[in-house]
Image (tube, rainbow, N blue to C red; front, side, top):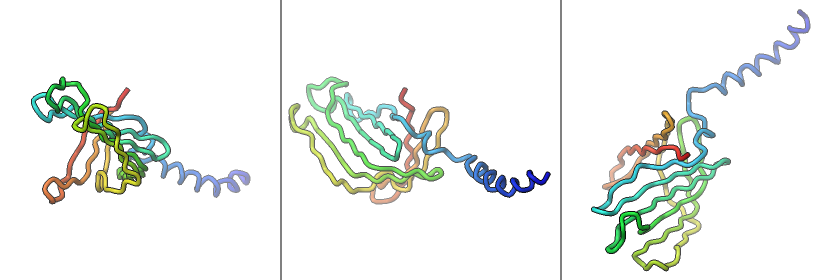
Length: 161
């Protein structure tokens, strides 16, 4: 009994750490991987899709690709893309994005036009973001400003295999 009583003071902090680790909130490492939205129509033949990738430790890439927007293009011909990368921090169900680089290209300037790179790139992305993971889906709730008024927006993304 004496041995147990000497060890029990050490067990209490260890148990507290284990209990704190058991949380009902999503774990940041469960975000790791690539996610994509359903295609969204832009015009009779044009559409776009968003992909969001999380890499450990704390690196994200968000890419939007548009297709079939310009005359003479087929529905699946690439029209433009933008790729924002940077760091992210997940705490509980909150996500903070810190963009640092933007790369974009648009066929409007010609099929052989160069990519444009903005670095450093400092803008807000997914303001006040919160997330949940449900059945292989990432639900990202954030504040957007469509008409200069803040609106809560929800983006649904599926995990890429």
